[in-house]
Image: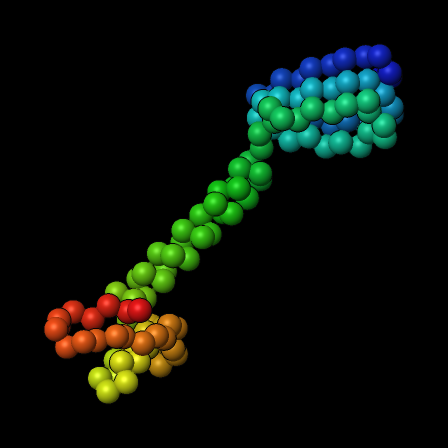
Length: 119
């Protein structure tokens, strides 16, 4: 491929390999597949419409990481050992082994309620 050439590739699956001999021109790649770009100096390469499995999997993992961490924290608070010092109001939530502290804090209690809410 040389300068002043425009190519549009629509992939349904598979891999498109741009050879090192591609030294110019405009290429647009879209659809579902993998692009291996060995070209040296294309005028432009547009991959905005290209989707591939590794990128999708990576994005899903990235997006879910924070939510899964929050779920793990909530599960620990609900299911694991909780120790409250009635004198100081200090509390500790432990890991599932019952020994490793995960979270700590202090409860402010004015004695009017039995419910205890971490501060």
